[in-house]
Length: 333
Ligand code: GTP
Ligand code: MG
Image (cartoon, rainbow, N blue to C red; front, top):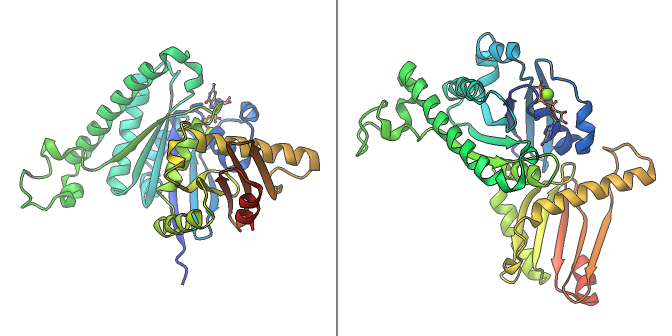
């Protein structure tokens, strides 16, 4: 029996931080420039995204205007924050009121920890394109350390108010544990990952691929099988893309392939194939979501060849192999 897995994903952050923009680009084939036309989200915009057959993402795009945020934290608290698999919290790097943004983040996180203690948290420091390139790393690092500090604070708040909720984190007899209010265990509860993102480059794909990677069930099985396939056809690298989003859900790299100096090649490919798909639909006049290309080939003289083709109902496969016509054709076969 195939187990169907549903994951509730909350997309939150201040109004205008770019939540609906990223959702539309990743899942609805918007181009970055199309997002300028998006209006503010009213209350919560729900969508369901199917992944690899047996994973469904229930994406809750939560409008970030203050009145809505207050409502999520009060009247809708249990409804919004129960059974959450993942919280994606978006910060606008250009925001003028950082303190206020962080205070809201703490409130949201406290509610999350209270109702969905196991949830994973991804923080996206977004609109990084608006920061001058030479300043980006510094600005990003500063923001990350603030966010980490606030994350601990949020956990501490819940500990204080509702210590019984967190009591099972460490069995009472564990060495070094002095009970639920012990400051040393205050980081235990939140599994936090932070990314710098922008809709204007491939950084968005890197962040979302990582989020998705952590959600797909049975990924270990898929990865083992990709490795067997890779060895059988003598490939340098194999990527598995989800069909609509072109996010890399799984990959395998040979030892030779590990020498590839382009560390961002995965998200770059997502970005390139997304554009390719767009271009195809322009020529054929099909609606954006319907168009699926069947084949993409690229031969880089004596260095490498690659092809991308439909693989399963929900995936495309990219195979990168050493040059040679015979090898290419048999791998494809
Ligand atoms: P609410 O629905 O009100 O909560 O806002 P939201 O977070 O959904 O914001 P939305 O996605 O509607 O984006 C607001 C504006 O930010 C749009 O004009 C986008 O084009 C712009 N935007 C989104 N992402 C980026 C980015 O990475 N860089 C820049 N420069 N602008 C962005
Ligand atoms: Mg929105």
